Image 1 (cartoon, rainbow, N blue to C red):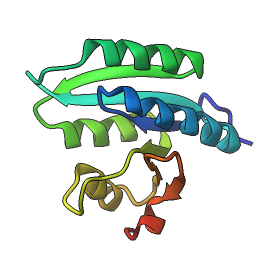
Image 2: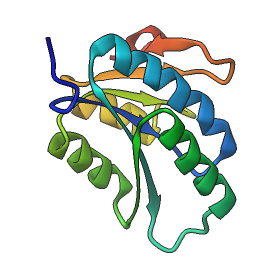
Image 3: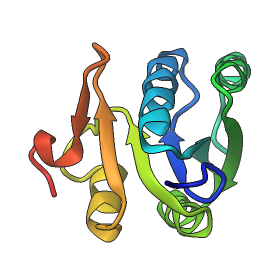
Length: 134
């Protein structure tokens, strides 16, 4: 059995109130997989943020016993990939990608050993492969 401090489920969020559903779903998945829960928001350096939404998400993360990190980077894709590799992430939970060129789709292809899970706007939980991608 895994020690939750050794492996993590990672939630990738933006600074939007609607990301709360992703954190809630990820807590359930982390419990099922016996992993710790982390929340990450990576935004481009210099981008405008929604401080109220970020504060709300920090509160939700705390409520669901998750550590939340906000990073700013000129290379968000690389920042996320490094975070996943450096933090023993075995499962990543996201919202729906906008299209096949999404940063999320690129991550799924770059990190085949990580189980990627999508939470739809209605709260349905899908494996990335069920969405038609591998």
